[in-house]
Length: 154
Image 1 (cartoon, rainbow, N blue to C red):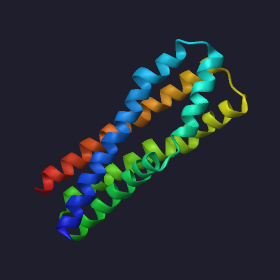
Image 2 (cartoon, rainbow, N blue to C red; image 1 turned 60 degrees about the horizontal axis):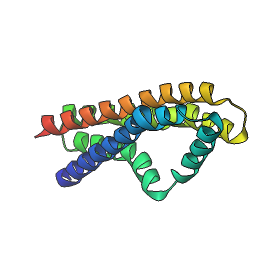
Image 3 (cartoon, rainbow, N blue to C red; image 1 turned 90 degrees about the vertical axis):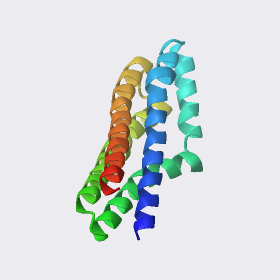
Image 4 (cartoon, rainbow, N blue to C red; image 1 turned 180 degrees about the vertical axis):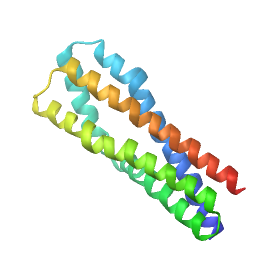
């Protein structure tokens, strides 16, 4: 069980790191680049991104990061490592709330409105990016918490 807890925590840490990097790249390069071009081109490009990002690799990283964080926390708690387990569970909560929930409640509806032509680019971009920053920082915090859980467990 200890090996499974370690594997779950390490893979969750890596997946959260990948998600943090994806959100970071969007915040510091993709969205500013789109803001610098014609609004119609930016809208078309973002619509394409929104279609292409729904692929198995992204969806696995996106969905497994909180699931494996939760699994690591539960396995650590069951093995008697209460403090590391609680820290890993905190990582799962942060990842779920900051990445999955924000994406579902804010970013996806914004993307749907963009696809339907119901928003203007400047309003969309500023709101989408603001919430994307939160998603990125949530994943960074999850990485820190999972690292701390592993450190405390060692």
